Image 1 (cartoon, rainbow, N blue to C red):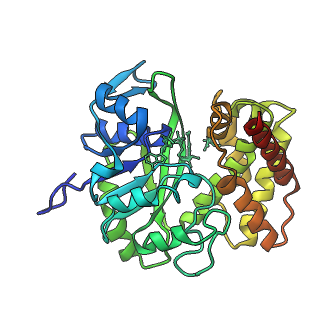
Image 2: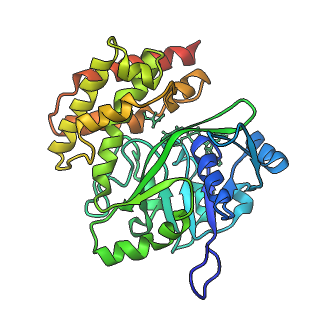
Length: 332
Ligand SMILES: NC(=O)C1=CN([C@@H]2O[C@H](COP(=O)(O)OP(=O)(O)OC[C@H]3O[C@@H](n4cnc5c(N)ncnc54)[C@H](OP(=O)(O)O)[C@@H]3O)[C@@H](O)[C@H]2O)C=CC1
Ligand SMILES: CC(C)(CO)C(=O)C(=O)O
């Protein structure tokens, strides 16, 4: 993509897992040439075989991808962080290599982000940024909030599998003027204009954030505890009341914090009822022995609830059982 009299914007995606690979694939299909920053065996596979995509359109297609290591990537104009929330702090030295002062950074992560109280407050989200390293590393005026409404996974052959609708909501994290927001977001509008991902730009990104936080808190830990797909969680009479209870608890917390989630409870349940037999990213992590994203998705929300004296008994119980299962799995 170009803007008048300027070089094409350099776009990097750090993390070639499910989300990073899907966003890279959709950008490549739309004619962009993002740098997919990966490591280890995944990097070698991308460099030698290309990026495999499996979606409703084709059983598998191979896309030519520019894949490189963080050491070789160099600075970019736009950087997407497609990592698990707990992987961002350890990746800071790698991320620093991709940044210039004016780089726009878009974290593509679930849960309460470290920037939640920025730029108006200095208060940090301690659960996800205990020593404030993330708050110090990123200029809030160059951060763009993103909320992901999509499901993706990696198959054994390395193909990224896209299922169902692909939507991302983006918006400035600040409460600046509409003009400030427009100049920050303009390149993103152009980049995604022709992609298969439906990107919507909003003011008050925290309203969308809470809709997704509620959906993740209601389904991700429970997907591990019950070993259930999304469809089972929303439709099985043994699980659906628990999902609804956590959604309700989270909406109550958001309201206490002064934010009305963009999607109401009925809307969230409707999204869930349409979900397929998808295993959440947390269930996938549990199965492959990877760390669970409980800090950003669950503990941060429960900690915020404590500060507001909001009881979230159902969410807490499921999160505690999930924590127990992760510890027992790690010990085995
Ligand atoms: N999957 C889904 O359907 C959805 C996921 N999300 C959210 O999106 C975010 C990303 O999730 P997802 O893509 O599923 O996660 P994955 O675990 O599939 O991918 C994360 C990738 O980041 C890589 N990575 C970590 N650190 C570095 C580094 N320093 N340099 C290079 N690569 C690195 C990991 O590599 P390695 O394997 O080597 O550690 C891994 O490939 C999460 O917050 C998740 O909750 C949101 C909506 C849906
Ligand atoms: C399943 C979904 C879409 C919502 O819980 C998700 O965000 C995840 O898998 O982490």
